[in-house]
Image (cartoon, rainbow, N blue to C red):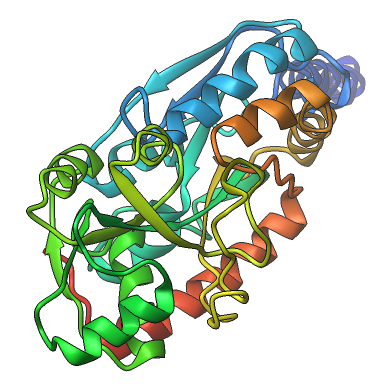
Length: 337
């Protein structure tokens, strides 16, 4: 009995030591441990894109994927998951393991406008995601069809006032950034240009080029070729300064509307709970890539800007955007389809 009494504590100590060793081994395999010991990434990283191939969101993901793969020493795969105003891609990433291997490349219209319009959305833009970096920013360009007798924003506003309810504008859908930004112009100028929603930018552009609608306001990439060919007339760029690729088109302040500053942005997010060292590594590598002349020049050719924002700055900007567009949506009484 006396011998058993002495061995029992020793046995417990051995079991405790074994459990600590197992626990340590498990901890060493967690995402945080991988991030801290420098082994991240140890396998390919997937960028889930909330739009189809060919759009600006997709272009942003593909612009960063190749140089990021070189920086990380692992393949970076682009996985297009369009649909649901960004919700399909957002849900995939929100539900993914927060280990830095599944990331979201998201369009601002989906990330800060969809949540304001869609009730019972199965993801939250703030709670479900950790900001990594903004990749591209692009102002809107207001263009009008051939034959519309206006050559400036001032003339467009005057025409709208003298021809009430005659003008209309195309958007890629109800609640899109094209929709809310043109409603912002309506509010600022005291005019009413009728909204004609389409199921995507492609169909909207087809009807605009065909003369079935009068104007649209969207990012430069789908417009540049048509502007160069003289098929569409640009009136204003919704930024503080002119675009290098559209040097003859006045900025919003030059056109008399300094508050008509509307920018689409295309950012990378990780699932909430992703370890800070992983976020910091990704953001650091992306910043270095975006500072290169090659990346900046490619963005400029698209009519966009390599506008890097790190995790904290992106989080602050996102909150400001949510607040700004909530006011516009409420004032214009915009509802989801």
